[in-house]
Structures are given as structure tokens and as C-alpha cells.
Length: 429
Ligand code: PLP
Image 1 (tube, helix red, strand yellow):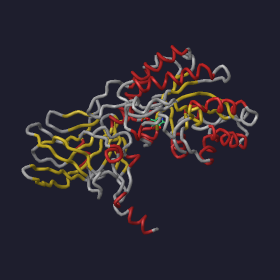
Image 2 (image 1 turned 180 degrees about the vertical axis):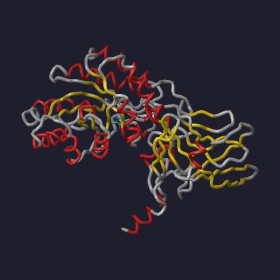
Image 3 (image 1 turned 135 degrees about the vertical axis):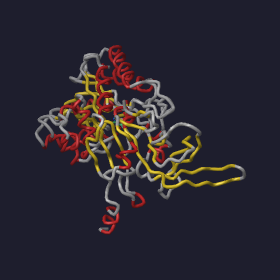
Image 4 (image 1 turned 120 degrees about the vertical axis):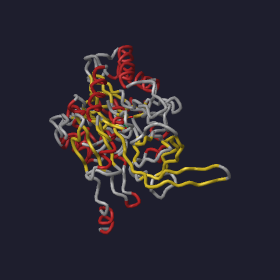
């Protein structure tokens, strides 16, 4: 169901009126609202695309780390893809099985590695190695813990940056990226893994890649998966691999369209897995955005309007109480989120440049057609991923509230931080 507009013009998420939530004294604005039922349904649809073949949907916790969201996805049989010790601890505390967790990151600290190694008798499902240099460091920690720990090689398949067809900041699998083991270093990595220095402490369980985010077609994903699966075919002659990992990156429709659905990415990867002769290995994927992005909105109040004139042209500003500190994506990588008035009975439209209160010109959500009639509340759509997790207190602003909906009702409210929390914190310094 997710987002619908009632006949009376009010906007609903998960069957709940968003204006009612914004006016609820426990919630207010800015507030993120998530539809847990829709998140669960999205995960089920993705799981079905594997048609019973061995697999793991490792939810990328970085997209939205709220426990209600993480637990909803674990309940649908997902595992977790984490990129820090804190995300790893969160996934474990939400009930993820250690075997169902993979841990990526180019600069994992020893303390973070120890959390991964300490979880379960063989550590987590796989520590994803992103450089040859990291291998000896993980082996030393595993030896100290007297364990054989599973790792996987996160390869950098060197997919051309243009071919990746996404914003530079979220393209990770090209030759110039800091992520992953370059293919030219694979033989060194394998030799090290076979050496007496490393071999009893680490076992190579998988090989994978994650080349970027917000892909709207399967092309770049498939190009990377093909490289990974062909490498796996060779690597398994020397190591008992259990899985291949095609990564995350499934795009969503932010308003400009998205030709491929999340199951399309899985189907494309499965076809290539068969072609490469590695279809007996479990297929892992690491979606974040596509599981949560479309099912969350950011509610904001209109603070005031402003008009500025240049020659004959009039610019209409709409100043809202949510800013780049609440939703960073537009300022960080020129992302566009659709904006809707919470009450909209149709009729005449007016173009507004929607901006937040933060003292930065980049605190700008772009130009949007909104009702010419008065309205006091808006929703920034598709804000369920990379929203709250990137929020900050910049300009002394409080972190936004979060509301979790299930079964057409509020399941939980995470109240907005106290307005003076920032003042107290800075007074400590
Ligand atoms: N896996 C890794 C290693 C990532 O860095 C990311 C995000 O950048 C993801 C998975 C999730 O990507 P997405 O949210 O685009 O599915």
C-alpha cells in the first residue's frame, strides 16, 4: 500500500494520515515515518525471485539502522550487511544469526574485527576483505582468538565509471575507487590465503563485489556479477567456496523512473551464475535502499513563504522546518526527492523552490509544483533510505523524530531529540 492519497486530499502512509502524525504532540516535525508492512512485503518479493535456490539477502544496515526496520527484515529471512562494528553489534542485538552477517569496509579497526570474530564459533558469516594488506591483520586477530574465521574477497571488478551510470559519490567498483581487492591483486591474495601464515586461521568462503548504488537498469550490476562469477569458477578449484556475492545497488524510483525492479537484479545475477557454472554456490546480495527507501517519508512544516523578483520573474520560496541536516542526500549528491503537500485537493499549481532552515545554500530541495492554495505541511518522499542515518545536529538542530507504522497504526515513536540537547552537549566541550 505504502503511500496513497484519500478522496478528501489527505496523504496516507500505510493507512495512516500523515497530517495526523505531524499534528500529534508526541511527534511533530521534522519526522521520518516508515511503513514496516511495506518493507516486509518488499523483502518477501525479493526472496521469491531466488525460486528456492540457496541465497542470502543481506540487508545493508547502513541504509536505515532503526531496530524496528532491521527486525522487520530479519523476520522475513534476511541477514545483514554491515560496515562498522556498531552496525554489527546492532544487527546481533536485533537477533541476526552470526552466520547471516557479512561485514564490509576498507578500514576495519582491530576492535571491530574482534567483534566479528567473537560472534559465533566461527565468527560471522564472512568478513569481507577489501585489500590484501587486511588479510594478515584479520589472521592475527583470528589466531589470537584461536578460531578459524570465514572471510570473503570483495573484489573491485574495475567496471568502467561511466558504465556504472550512477552518481560519482556512490560508484564504488571502478579502477579509481578505494573499495575492494583489485583483480590484479587476486593472485597475491590467494597465495597469502594458502600460506602457513594465514591458512589455518582464515577460510575463504566467498567472493563478491558491490559496485555502486541506485542502478536503474541491471547492466552495471550484471557486468560486475559476470566478472565475480567467472573469478569464482577459478578460485573454487583451490578453495571450498560457499557463496558468491553480487552486492547491493538496486535502484528505486525517485520520480525519474526506474526500469529494473529488485527481483530483476536477482534474476539477472542467477542467469549469469548458471552461465559461469557456479549456480550451486549460494547467491548473496546486499540491498539497502530498495528495501526501505520507497517506504519512508520525511514530514515537514511550512515555516513561511518568500517571494523574490528579478526583472519580471518571480521566484517563490517555500521555507520548511526540515533541512539538509535531516535529509542530506540533495546537498551531498544532488539527489532529488519528490515533495507532496499533506493535504492537496488538486486545482491550480505553483512552482516553489523548497529550502530548509540551515545556513548553507546547498540546503535546497529543488523546485516543485505544489498547490497554489494554502497548505502547511509537506512530505519529502522516498526518504526511508540514507535519511535518518545521515542526519546531524549541524546548526544546533535537534535530530528528527521517527514513527514506525504497522497494521495501519503507530507501532512505535522515537521522539525528537530535546531542542536543547545540542546546547548541553556543546557546553560540555
Ligand atoms: N553493500 C555495500 C558494501 C555497500 O557499501 C552498500 C552501499 O553503499 C550496499 C551494500 C547497499 O547499497 P544499496 O543501498 O544501493 O542497495
